[in-house]
Length: 613
Image (cartoon, rainbow, N blue to C red; front, side, top):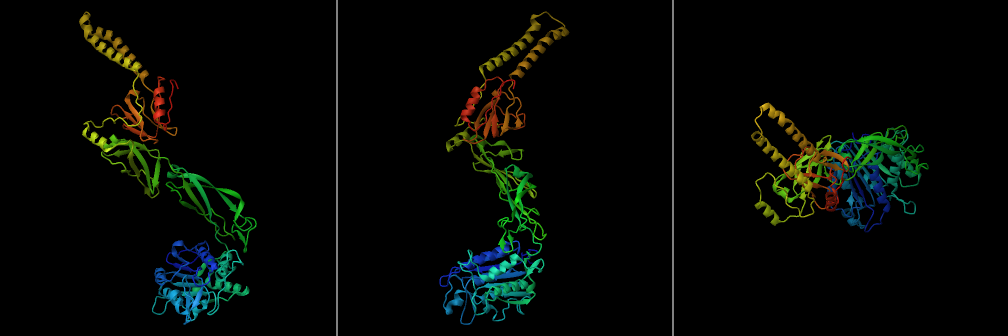
């Protein structure tokens, strides 16, 4: 049987109706405060009702289809069906109790047609298959609900039920009382106030749970003691033994604590240890914030002590922004040696400048040029998990297309999402340029990209390098001619003598050529992300680089294009789209390159390394 101790209310339903603004009757602000407090009590740690099993109708103006809605709400309840009303109560010519709504009429002939009659409530509860049925009527003339027997449970022709319990704020022809605004800052109706006060204080000697029968006896005694109208009740079978709330007078479960923590986007994708700072429990009130009915003077009603403690935990990988993680037993210890509460940690994930998240998928925008979009390409991207991902862009891919890379998204315990790459435009293009490129499509595997419309940095070999290159070419031609002419011009020699003559000559030339070639090479071109090196191209001469340009204005990605189709030493294809590029030159001639990159690509990180460093 579901009750407040186990909190299993999946097959239960509570319907709360409150009215405080009236067209013809006197407005009752106290009814609004009582309505909110009763709903808070049900969903709190004492009663443990889940929010999705409570249906509230606050300040309903007219009757409408309310009787039909009551029948539907209680139809799926098989354990507990609870009804609560607070507001004005009236009666018609047949002494039938009418629960007044916002537009209810004060004329007796129209009361039962403009109000929710209790017979309609009784009908919805009787039809319900719930085993325990409870009705709380906090209104004037509530005792009229018991004039015809007051039964809420099923009759002989309906399914059997364990019982019913009816609580009424006043007698059949007695008005109910409520606090005035001059008496309290937050006035309430007396029945609801005394009932919730008794639940929050607990009943000594009652045990771990508060039953309906003893709870009503305590409430009735306190109302009569304070000179308030005597409430009434009707019970059937074992409904008086239903546990409506935990008893705070015994070992109550401790209070739950809340904490916040902030992690980066990349940290949220892996198991991340965090250190939380939470307050300690106030010793004066055991963390409840109250001593009896008065707020605790030590903690001013907060329940927190002056000290703090640290909680070390590990966030699960793939945690999303705004997710709340429950750490069992890390809250306040319960009063009376009760069990400790939990620590609810809200995780805030900082956004990433490049990657985003959609459910379990990672998203990223990939700017490509018009030629790459037209003829297709393969781009290597570095995922937030520090792994290289090859993204294949098919030919004629429209801008805005989402390319899915399976199993490279958010990794969680129940599986891994995908990487969603949105193809965006890297340079302006129009229909005329598209038509011209289509008519001039070459037969090669991949053409060089067209001249970009924006600023482009082009690397050209120096004049000294051209002279050295032509000198090597002429030297090679002369060597070949000499090898052919020497046997003709010199006297005949044995084959062994030719080897002894040409060996040192050719060996020296090859060693000299290899040495000069090694000295001509440039230092490695390194691609960095926030100063962290993650790929090495090897020794790549500047003449092999056709150009470097930003993928889009102001975008942190650039495109590096080689003059000829080749695989780089790192295994990455050409061209390569990277976040940040670092350029270095061994010959101390990078000034024009550096100045051009700084002028055309202000978002790039440029660093010129000198020789010997």
